[in-house]
Length: 318
View (cartoon, one colour):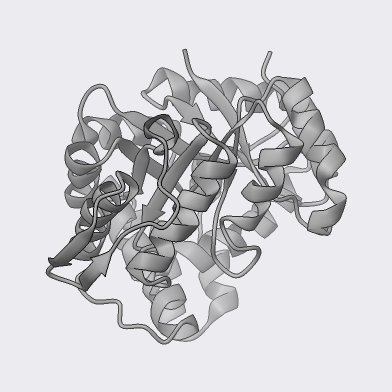
């Protein structure tokens, strides 16, 4: 049976004012709260608040980068989160992108596959309260051990943010599953087999329950342009077969014409990647992701002329 989560925090509402919103999500039937980390709230703080505000919900990061915290700091942060919500926390981590890692955090985006693999291996040892003294391919740790040991039942599962076959297979082989995003329900059929059987598949799904199709497509093009021009996402959609549909986007973006780039995104691509329409139609489309292999949904409600809290109510699991 699939788990039905939602992405937090909500936009344009201070974190301190979201307590009632988060508590209501549990009453509405959502099972999980998932955060992300780019240029808004960090991945852990909203979940630390939710650990107290929603004591029955599972909490997960989708995803935090492996580059922007040192290995020991990452282990301590994960352990603290797991201690705050024992048995209810899932660590989602991934490479993030060259934009976030290099441009915003002045850190080389080197050997992403190996960095994720090494981070997963290190965390498995560290979170099992082992002393880690090891040189990995992408970093080394000398004599680190958690000062606040985790109980075995509190050790969180790890899921890996993955797009193409190499990372998807790594998620299945080294971790407990994968986090996927910016894809259609049909794309799930291509992605999930690469992870392998018996693994959790968390999908961040971009949703706007609005019948104002023109507005959703207008703002949706801007969101898609911002992501799908990043090299890792461009390569992902080339692999999925959208290269011809996105050629205009990429060519205009490379030429420096951002407006023309967004305008070149076909309606069918927006409709593939952003769930929109009446709430009931949106729920049905989200269920298509589940039917095609997603085990946990984590919709991110896009604030394109709608009230996000009401949208969360309208999209609540039935």
